[in-house]
Length: 322
Image (cartoon, rainbow, N blue to C red; front, side, top):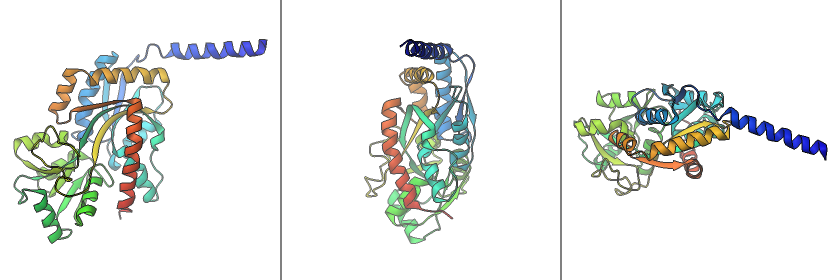
């Protein structure tokens, strides 16, 4: 009995010491990895969120862009980071796509989705199909007809093979029975630049990374992959409305390595919730093109599990890309 009592006392002291050790978190700046180059969807959401998190936590949250391999390089780095809460990840729905793609390609995945715990979903936008304003296509039906008439002639840019700009276009190709040429870049930013400079005919991307160019009249939106109107683009129809049965939501969320202490996760969740509910932050993110669509960790995990299954199936349908 004495041995058991001593053991329980020791365990209690250990738990108390652990809790006290994290009571002052954070004590120095936090790194937020964005696994894409500057200028893309994740980056435009991450920067105002990082600033607001820094104010809420009392420490600077520094955004570090770690682009490459469609997001796999930076996400893999985040997965391997010390689980102390000082490295967090802002990632898109492609967090589910990339490991499945690696499996199909016969490569060892850079990470597993089980390497992470979700903190909060921040945005959830359908991707938007956009073309240069001087292109001949005024509607999605005209674009599809042109692609059908000349298989492979039209091309589209993306953030990388199997990325969140590639998968929705591949889904459209399959559903509409068309063939286009896919040109992968190192991130959404470079893909947008390629569209603006006339190097590609179209891209699919989140509203936040293209809205300023739509407003300036340099690009034209034809349709989006959502199941409800996009607030920033009320006149742009969904593909479903036009008879194409495809949906794709490019959400963004905050993650930490799976072994981050519960006390730290609780602190980050509380900060993320405060930030997401801050009217000033909401206005800033909305101005960038993506209204905040917040889910706390538990709800986000449920949503992510369902979306993960859908996205893995989409990658399997695409198959091996040579």
